[in-house]
Amino acid sequence: MAIHRKRNKALGVPELIVIALGGMVGGGIFTVLGISVALIGVMTPVAIILGGIIATLAAYSYIKLGVYYREEGATYSFFKRTFPGAPFAASLIGWYVIFGYISTIALYAYTFASYVVSGVTSGGDEWLRKAVAGAVIAVFVLVNVWSVKGMGIIEDIMVYSKLAILVVISFLLVHHRQASLPVLLNGAAGVSALDIMIVASLTFVAYEGFQLVINAVGEMERPQKNIPLAIYVAIGLAILIYTVIAIGAILAIPFPDIIANKEYALAAGAGRILGPIGTNIVILGVVLATSSAISGTMFGASRQMAVIASDRYFPRILAWRHNRIPVYAILVMGGFAFGLVLVGKLELILEFGSITFLVVSLLMAYANHRIRKQTGSSGLITVLSMVGLAGGTVLILYYELNVRPLQMLAVLVMYLLLAAGAWLYARRPWARKRL
Image (tube, rainbow, N blue to C red; front, side):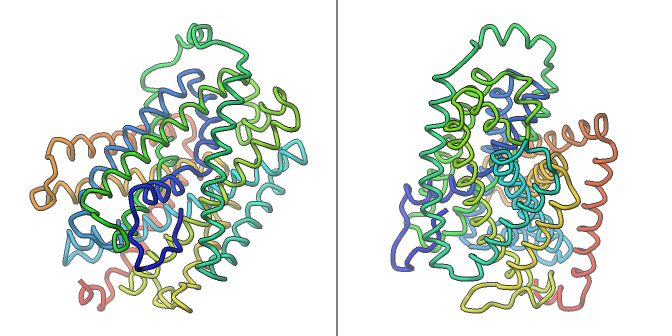
């Protein structure tokens, strides 16, 4: 995600596409792949495509609201503007979206650590993995606090490099395929449509990040045309990249290997096929992808956190900036992300992130539906978006209830705690004055 733009330079469609892809193509695909294959095997690419369709439906309302309001605050600002005089609603979506970003930082850091550790050990040392995840979060906290310009240069290098390496990884996997799709499809008889839809919902977090384009609305030319074009093209490219990687993986790596090493499936599989060189290429790609996503997410989300804090829905100190950098917001986000890594395993972090962004996107679709005449939106598409996003949320909870009831309970407790925090800040006297 390129962010160190000069204010007198208008961003065109190519730059906006890179911003969206930089936000989306992070550690999500590497994390989702192993879990997806364990659940639905060869049907994983189908679930990834369906997840992209859900993301496209979600993007519709973000685009319409972004073009209508043209504010950099994105999710929080749109909801606050659409529902004036409702402090709890504004506070709630602020808390949810920020902790959703925190969960993605934790997810990317966990994936980074899983692949790095896999290169030096068997990858099974959980506490070493958590320590490495904490270290990479700390590094990018320092980078974000250090300099916006310096962070932007690093971010640009990582975005372009990771996209190039992902293309190489995809080519190597497909070129060294060990099986064919028809053969693999013969063994997919036991996979139900419900299973595929559950995995599609879980993959939603891999598409989180397209809305970062809207944050650059003040620096782009023709936003009413370029915002939708850039976001839809970026989502289409992300679907293509994810699908090719998934097809390459299931053709080249035996399913038992993917399932046994689900936290670092691509590295383990590439090592067996291509030797140490293959492993190192995959690890380099994951390191760049996750590092870029951690840095970019921390940059954008910390500023949104500062905006929410300036409205006093978070502690006021989080709005403080030094040289325009929200130092305390960055530190707090890094601390909470590391805390989530410490208390949660991969599945908990992934599912909390997916549910959170499904819920937030559902609220955006509802907001857009409410003012659809002003935004020029289709009532049918907004209703389809709400149905798809609500359905995805229910499917993940259904899966959790049947497979990991204690984990579902943990997720629900987290949401209740967030709702309680949002309610406490919303009921303070100044909250109503701000709206």
